[in-house]
Length: 387
Length: 221
Image (cartoon, rainbow over all chains, first blue to last red; front, side, top):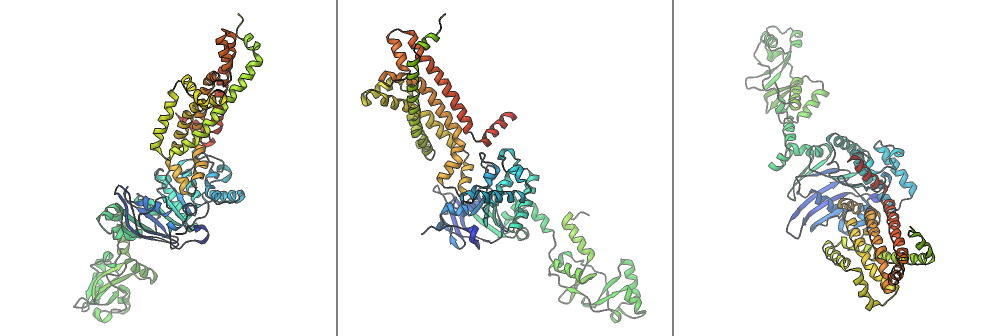
């Protein structure tokens, strides 16, 4: 196979794709087993799993630091093994944990490693360094000639990220870049990275064992265990529908919190709305409204079907004394199904200025969604079901 | 008390000539030692198992008494500068080889990995990362070899290699204590001077970032 030059930074690539990729060692250890994974352009994909799950090996196969023993890995639709490894790596940003910076080089020299390898002029390199330092709020004049050990851990790792961005690659690989930082700095850098990615639109493949980090950063999360991909999905979907017990356990407490967030109408509706039959009198309706402290009630017939609604205001307006609710009620009730999306229902109430939605399933009144029940459901999701 | 000064002054011209020759012998020997040991040490870092064998064998050379080694090269290479330098270069090998090996191996694997992952080829990793970081250790080996060789080179005179050994041997043969002093003292001073010079070089070659790092650690300790 002819060796091609990878110029991701010039042409841009569409997709990174693992096709049945495997990596086994001579001693029989299987690090990665039949991995299938597609990374779309501009995505932030996090590979996560316990140590030894093959996440780092998978990452390192992308820039040929590790060669797969089976399957193929496509970059721009071409097998990575068809690229010259040195050229390939120059076109892919790479950030590692801790020791990544060269201790004998200044900050500027560290950032300029790849541009130098690519033969940029000193002036262009220097401009790029200044631009990058400013991007993370570090003054080029102050920092450019310092040495890595003169910087804090957080600053060093920022430089590590900038170095990966220096030659403007489309794809950046990150292997637990924030693992060694204290929690506060780590969160700060995570936020910065997220913001950075939104401004520079890089495709990032990120390895971590920290679910908080994955949820914070990822567009999609790939959960691996013993070399196998268990689930590849958006953070929300992984929280909501973990593929198996292992994923569920790995997601852990996040899942518990997330599970309480209602997502269909049935979860949030009040199942005992204030109702009266069509035959009831307006006086009865007034009395019930007073005792239940509501100003509107739904009117149902003998079979439990929704017939309409009456409000205190229009009962008074219609001078409805002596008439039945069936005669005076309004019928244009806003209705929703119990299995419809809760957020859609919420938006509808908001946009149409509705006080409530009647929940109707096959003609039967099942409950009611009011603003109050919405607020209660959300409060329960955020603070738990504390009484 | 007359001291040693009159002896040195009396043999001034002779000392100067032998001193220069001494420096020449040591310099050539160390240079040959470097030319062999540094590339070999680097090469061995890629073959750790072989490295143990090679370093042990080189260590064995070191244990052969210098007098014996000189006697051994005599029948093969004859007398003169060439056999003397060859024998001394063999002695120079070990410290340089071992320090090159240890120095390059001592560069953190993660740093080398990172250099590679950023797209440096083998030579670039070596010249931009491994050697700059290993330089102080390698120079320490060179310094050790140089200081040893300055004293061992005195024996080179035995096989006609010349140098300050000439004065000492002559002094021993003629029971002239002054001649012995005239050869021994400059040799000792030369060893000290070379040691200082190479210490300075070692510091100069320590990358600034690493030097400050080491200083900072000492300060913190």
